[in-house]
Image (cartoon, rainbow, N blue to C red):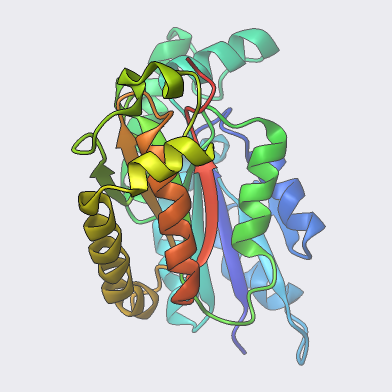
Length: 285
């Protein structure tokens, strides 16, 4: 019997508690801080014949030495025929340090080291697991409500296996999104910023959108990029990757990338991709 399993892991302080509560709300049975060696046994105990069993397992560095056995346990579940996906929650070092300082709770790896050193050591320990994750969510700029929506969008009502895409706008001056699978640069398009009538507006406004999309280069890019996503879609699903983050950037993430993301999301929806739009840096200026 095939069981749907989500392994929730990632950086301490990146929002695991919020993510697991969101999974519970959409029907997943959550088991927190389970030793990896007990995962297979737990799945067998919780599985109910004939029912649509969905189990979320939470594993992180709190498990100490046992955490080192996690990848082997994941492989064991996959070899048993279970549908296993890994959700990795990420955040920048400065953000994690700030969250721990505000909570006044010690980091699980913080012994004789300082807080930043503990975060960096954890990031190194999780490097291979992050690289193999099915979905990475960077919570650096997400509030709890936005994180809940991202998790619910990804793991609710999964009867049909389709590619689910987060199409994100961003500003290069704020850094490339660390959770992006595909990144494209929209700075080749004329910038509405230099028109005083559009400077205060955003890519969500009709005048700015029409200006950006009115250039042939924009239309050519959108057509080819939507085709590119369509090309990789079947391969992603075949390889077990159901989630993809597509990031389009411009200088500040206000005009060009926002307009292009809105249009690209619409085109991807028409070819059967489930789309969630996120404007990471809109409003930061």
